[in-house]
Length: 508
Image (cartoon, rainbow, N blue to C red):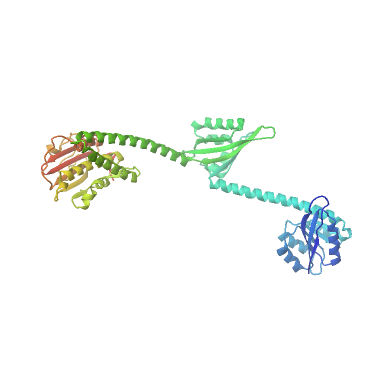
């Protein structure tokens, strides 16, 4: 059996009374009415009483009928006892006050009930105590619940803070100024290359891990933040146990007592080594870009001057100049795709000669060779000049003409495979292909490139050297620090380059 009794009332002059939902376990209707009458005398609450009489009804009410603000229970029931009801309530509604209202006398019962978790024990013969007991229980429950809610909110806030710190890889630290005691989180210790936070339990131990060149700055920034009250925000290098150098960013603020005296500091730390390395790389890239832009502008200026000087007429200048600029742009496009890490010799050769290779008129071959950016650009411009000349006047201008471009790696003292001669010193095969005789440094090999045209119209030596010839014979030899021989033989143009192997030109 379940009864619902409404005991709502108004608190005179104090606004609406606080609602209070009561679960009453009582088998006697008369005693239930008596309880209701005494609850009505509590003028600062409006009581909504739900009465149950049996064990099953009580369990159902506790399970489904809540939330309740107060549980009142008889001690002795026909099919149930109050101590069992108390155990059920403490298990399922541990924060709800539980008060026994019983006709049974005896301090032993009351003491046992309080030990089991009851809030209080009221004897029906002294029912007037119920008002005081209920009011006190509700106030205490409210305070306990507020405190529990605050603790739960604080724990949740701390959990969110820990999650945010861990997600941001931020280490937390706290310094006590009076003792120089330092408390750090695991992440904060890891930012210094340490596994155990106890390894930096004092400020002095922390300073030991700071790079010697940054210690004075670090300590000065801490003193300034404490004395001025300004936020602490600094970056400094740390030395990890393995000897490696890393960067850390530290932010914090001083803590003061009620008299304004500093008592400590607290804040966070972040390992910014990756960011510092990225900044260094960015600076290097900017410097490299500045260098490349200057070199490119100088090269464009040189191409313009040389093209203008070699052009047969002013009208012929734009086409020749634009052609060479396109060749330069092609080389830059290739190097950009390779992130300016250089290119292979095969790539450079194919960049200019690919259309002719597909047509079966150019044969390109040789072992894998790596070229740095400067060498790649120079060789590409040289191939462009040779190919342009071949297309206008040489082998590629005739239907049956062809070009062979090959290269090989030759060690000091070794003869070339195709020529049967040594490319070193002044022992080049024929006078027409003899270079300057510049010797390759001892212990280094050389890259030997050959450009040979055949099947084209007869070649007559030019009366004057044009831009392409000067680029190959002078500019290329200077840029590559090697020997260059260019011959305008009747059967076809031939060019032979001997380039010392180095970090700029190296076999794969």
